Amino acid sequence: MKLSQVGEDRLLEQLLPSLSIRKNVLAAAGDDCAVVKLPQSDNVLLLKTDCVVEKIHFESATDPVLVGWKAMMRPLSDFAAMSGLPQWALVTLIVPATRSTTWVKKIYRGLNSAAKRFGVSIVGGETSNTRGPAVISVSVAGFAEKNRWVSRGGGKAGDDLCVTGRLGCSRCGKHLRFIPRINESRWLTKNFSIHAMIDLSDGLGADLPRLARVSKLGFKIDLESLPLNRGAEIRNAISDGEDYELLFAISPRDRARLQKSWHKKFPKLPLTQIGSFVPPSSLIPHPFPGGYVHFQ
Amino acid sequence: MKLSQVGEDRLLEQLLPSLSIRKNVLAAAGDDCAVVKLPQSDNVLLLKTDCVVEKIHFESATDPVLVGWKAMMRPLSDFAAMSGLPQWALVTLIVPATRSTTWVKKIYRGLNSAAKRFGVSIVGGETSNTRGPAVISVSVAGFAEKNRWVSRGGGKAGDDLCVTGRLGCSRCGKHLRFIPRINESRWLTKNFSIHAMIDLSDGLGADLPRLARVSKLGFKIDLESLPLNRGAEIRNAISDGEDYELLFAISPRDRARLQKSWHKKFPKLPLTQIGSFVPPSSLIPHPFPGGYVHFQ
Image (tube, rainbow over all chains, first blue to last red; front, side, top):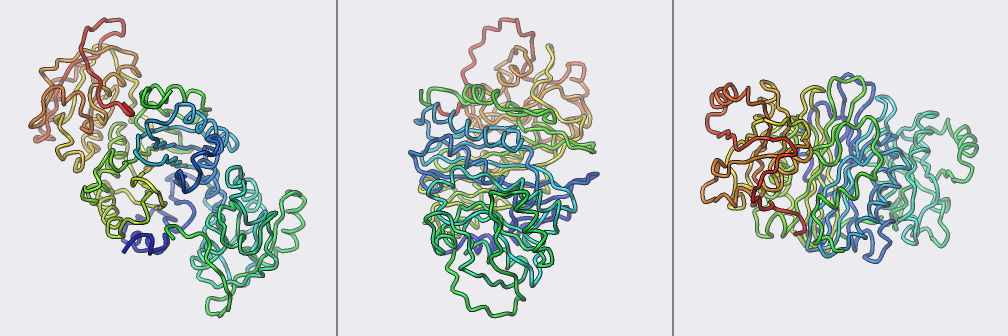
């Protein structure tokens, strides 16, 4: 069977349970970052790696400064999803030998300004030759407080499901300039009990079912309530992907206080309740076309 | 200027000093792993990422189990170079959608058996589509004791330069089956003061000058003393690369004790003194053809 006939999730499900997981691992594949215990520490260590591939995640003609920005911000968005604080990044640049040094320097300029924005140090750089498209892979390590990091798996039936910002049409430009919701996420976990969280990278239609599956719940969504970017329709909000907004579950008891204090703290950024978690047995007849699915 | 006209070291030298390095970073680009401080801990955190690229580091027809093995063992060899203990790995697999799932499963079988050999947990897996050659990128985090990790920069004039194992002709097969010298490195730092160390991945002709440059020293080498693999000549030992052996600097006062106890502990693995560090001003007329240099 070819990869194009299998989704990424299904493939990784087949591959990863066979891997030996040790006791000091708190979250592994299947969450936004890996979370591991640090001896003698009040923090856990968060690890994440992500890559952008030419002709898949960016066009060859795209401004390389923006490509570098995106390559760094993608894993940082996963830190936002777990309410972690990224600290150090390693960069792997796989580039054809015919590419200009100027292009590579611009990639680094983008990587560096993105890293600076969140106080991340680039502590290692590798380069490799290739005979194919360029790849920029960034892996990031950082911390979260033991009792503060948020997994995908803590949702409760009845929880409100909320998203930050607006969805859809990211490919019009936002996907190259987005700012991961780290500050928003840290504020959320400082002031509220966030039960489960994910960043919307593959589209609501793919990422919400993931969040629900790990939380062992069903969900219902009010499609009309979805906050849309200019030019986007509901189907874009569901399937485009690359929104890099947060989707999280929170008790409805916190609804009034959350809305009020959010708008005070982040007056320019919408926060929208789009639905809720329901018990897993509930049959929700819901036409939910898949989000962007790798290999398909 | 094209990348093919610049070496990897020169390019990274141009790119990396401009990056903001924070105080809790003990070693960054320019050493085998990044080393950062962990608050409240007797350990430092080591971070390393490395990749293998189809048609560059392996052939398309190569057994994917061996490709996975190599992809995991390459960054672990950098842990050996710093006498660190790898703990957790993240895997990024960039594969054309037309590749078979069997191929991917075999890659993971190789990754997993390599990780198990050193007690490393694979805690995350990402996949991405590509229209080019496959890439397997592995990033690893682990520990070393605060006072035990070894950098490239601690060599002293007069130090013996020693290598483990035999050099050259790695492409005959060893590059797909090698075992990083982690146990040997840990034994060395437990029993001796190792001043500087590096793993030989680009060939002695590239890696020894790196070690000397970071240690701000010159070196002399007895080419006739180089331990050669079967079929290898001196030029192979210098330029082939992918030896994944350790090159380290140690006081000549330890020479007798080192040789005696090494041969008792690792009777099947040669340890060879191949030369020594000399003051930086010494002019050593030495025809030292470059090792494998990326992009050239």
